[in-house]
Image 1 (cartoon, rainbow, N blue to C red):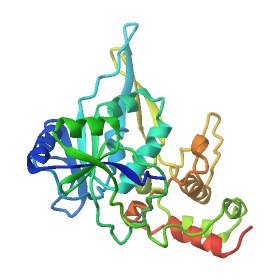
Image 2 (image 1 turned 90 degrees about the vertical axis):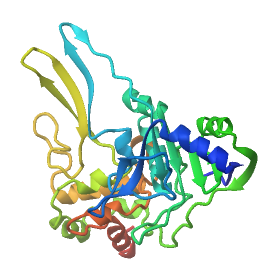
Image 3 (image 1 turned 180 degrees about the vertical axis):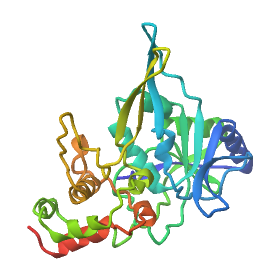
Image 4 (image 1 turned 180 degrees about the horizontal axis):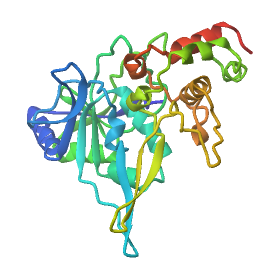
Length: 320
């Protein structure tokens, strides 16, 4: 689904330095490996761009959909306006996070806080070295973002990125393929939606869910998980604040509604819901696979639940 050819520019050392200065003058972040061995999005401490993309432990989504954010407050008959976010840049983003960002752009197309952050951001992708847990696919879905950099060549992924390259003196625009990773031949187990629909009584659901701790780690690190809860708090001075915070479909309260009814009681039901969402889309994006193959969920799960293995078993059982 990614355009095979996009405008590419040659960068001299001078134009590359100018581009690096323009990016790092913003509040710039990049995935960096800490002393504990975890890769996190960290502020750039110098005006030097990273050489390649890395997969951060908590993905790019946290920059546009914070784990907790204030939506509005009400005091003395007045609603507060949303704060204008500061411009920022994220550099060294891999393909999977660009695809996830496109997915979130569709989900939050009419969400004002999200759109304000997107409008004031600059997202710069770079080549990555796929890890053993990766199973990316350039054809899975389109990408978002602004620039793709590889040494002294740059591709414009958005009008803003194109304008920035031109302003920095990049020259020699030409169409050239983007150097995306090669799709894994085992990108996704074969599981049809019909097989999934007929799998409600399959033993694998209870077997896999039995060990689930409902810790929520998989949702935190998933770049396309976006469920949130709304919390209203009243201070002693009468100020009312509404915030939203990340939620998780494995949490026991996630599908409960007024009156105590639970649409997905039990961890097995919640596991089915998660696999359905990731493999077959959700809501208006039904039919669009939401799993970008980053492997974060498998890597972080303390009990080794693997949606790919579940899908492979369901498909292998020939449920139809």
